[in-house]
Structure formats: structure tokens, C-alpha cells
Image (cartoon, rainbow, N blue to C red; front, side, top):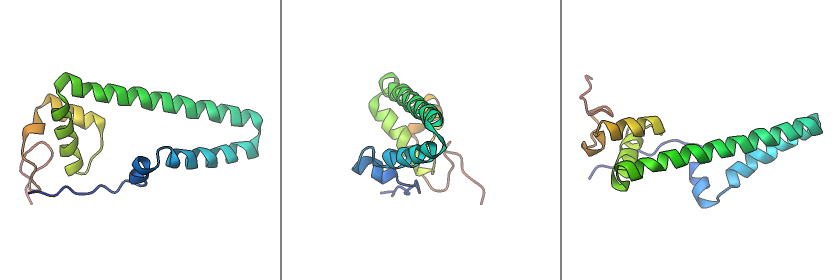
Length: 119
């Protein structure tokens, strides 16, 4: 049984444990900085934040659609593959799915595309 490598993603675990905690910390810090500048800067900062959230939601929904296009099991296998190789790019997940790389065995001596590396 092959063990997955754990990615070093700051605060990623906290996102699951306490939804909104990390985002709330960031928002609070940015809000405080904006308020020190002035009310109009604060208003624009809030709009930037909301636009960011709407964009993220849209991108995640597009990402989930791969599960319905290819299958939920294949999406999970593709995600497992990119994480195994130390990446979290949704574009790479898409490449893995379209290239059917999700069915390849995970191996530390190969790259994400299943090709052997020369050491």
C-alpha cells in the first residue's frame, strides 16, 4: 500500500475543521487595514472580497462538473494523483482526466504523467 505525501498547505486543515475561520481572520485583518485608510477604501475592499468569493464559488462548481462528466470516482482518483505528486492545480486535474492518467499506478519513480524519471 502506497502512502500519500502530505502537502504543506498553510491552514488547509483549519478550513475543514472550522469553516470560515481562516477566511474570517484574513477578512478581519484586511478590514482593519482598510478602515485605517478610510470609509471609501473600506467599501471597495469589501467589494473586492465579495467578487473573490463569487469567482471562487464559480470555479469550484466548474471543477465539480468534471465529476459528472467523467465520474465521481475518476475525479477523486485524478485529485489523488495530483496530490500524490505535490500539486493542487485544478487545471492539472483536468489534464489527468482528459489524458486518462487517473488509471495509472501511483509511483514515486515516475512523474505525474506516468513517465519514468532519470535520476
